[in-house]
Image (cartoon, rainbow, N blue to C red):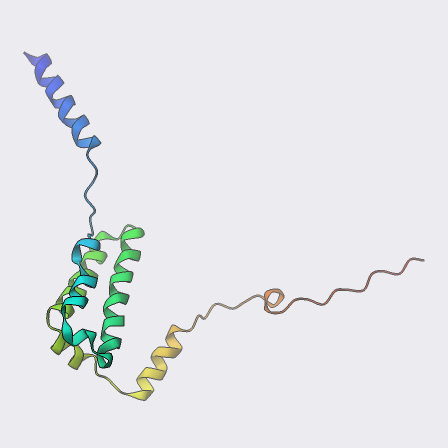
Amino acid sequence: MRRPLIATGLTLALAAAALPARAACDVKGAQIEEGIAAKKELLEDANAQTVRDLRTLRDAAIVLETYKFPGECEVLLGIAKSLLANPDKTIVQGGNTDEDEAESLVEAREPKAKVPADEKAPAAKAPAPKAN
């Protein structure tokens, strides 16, 4: 009696292990690109930045999923979906035209890592030592 119960438990465990694990963060299932295509407001040239922002959020979610941050990935997808659900409100919210803020944001995006001096420009060849 006990042996069939153990065999059943073992069979269930093996079957569960054989099934593919469900992705913790379903970026593809969020259908961000399909949502963008379905909203005529977002297809207008004036709203290109909003579309870029939505795609950036999607791409960031992919990065988070890749580095095993499923919770943060889901949060990002939730934000993207909420922005996508109401494009008129999203467009108004994203309409900041403050040039100083824009400049500081562009500056913040610039890489800050220093390039070693030997990688900046090819070093000049040192003259060969003279034979005596």
